[in-house]
Amino acid sequence: MSAVSPSPILSPTSLHFDTKFSLFSTYISRPINQKQRQPPIIVLSSKSGSGLTSEDKKELLRSYGLNPDEFLSEPSSKTKRRKELQKKGRGAKFVPDEEPKEKESREIHRLLQVLGGKAKRKKLLSPKGMNVRPMMEVVKGAAFDILQVAGGCPASLRPGRWLDLYSGTGSVGIEAISRGCSEVHFVEMDPWVVSNILQPNLEWTGFLDVSTIHTIRVETFFERADSFVGKDGPFDYISVTPPYTQVDYGVLMDQISKSALIGKDTFIVVEYPIRTDMLESCGCLVKIKDRRFGRTHLAIYGPEWAQKKRKSEKTLQSVVGKV
Figure 1 (cartoon, one colour):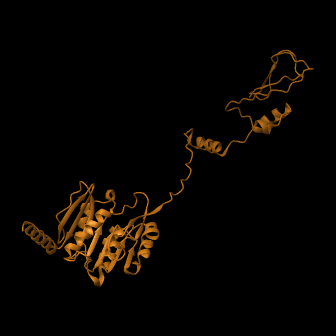
Figure 2 (figure 1 turned 90 degrees about the horizontal axis):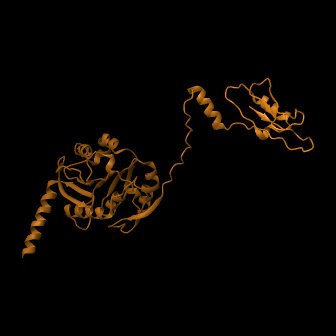
């Protein structure tokens, strides 16, 4: 550290001397006129490894009538932390801790609606963003129209139990109750979606009493399938609307085909993305319909009698058209 001062006590000629601290030197570069008193100018510099303590620096500043607090400041907490890490890591680069990011708030809007049945036109809640991707209404409408015709009752669904896998907002299962199903089981692993979206939708439509919510993963639900089937036997309908990028459809459909959840009269609705190969059968069920809606595909599996019925209806329609 060096100090320069026009002190009148020193010789009017240029003077240089060393104190007991090797890094402090005083320089006078021109004669001083004692009548022209000017405020002293202090220039401080330091070199690493000097061994000079902060008290020595303060003492030097006091000797020139200056307040040490105005020139010496305590190092910031980041600076202290950097020095500690450099000592421990022998000069390793200091990377400051990232500020914790606040949890992203999830917004809700009311864009979906029930398309048919006793709750028709009732609005449903859904979260903004792509974490939960409800089935498009045009796809949902087509799926239920196909199921109603295949079941022999174009105006409504034949009564039965519905299993809504990856239910999210619950729009598919709610549509099923609205159109005639007697009971729906919803499987959704996200507790926030269940408490803020699914359950309010069931309360709003008045279907909470005929609904059962399972807040678990679909894979876990399959593992416990026997306990969920119980005395009521297999489900009459199963909807499968998973997040496209998070499932292997081959594995998923294989699990469903071997599960006790399906029976010989079960209908399965599967929404899947383009460029996905779906088998022509799922266990004892056959594919009765496969339609495309832009980048989304809809496959419906059902019993053989439903497929034969659809073929006979098409034949009858073609004959009537010719007549």
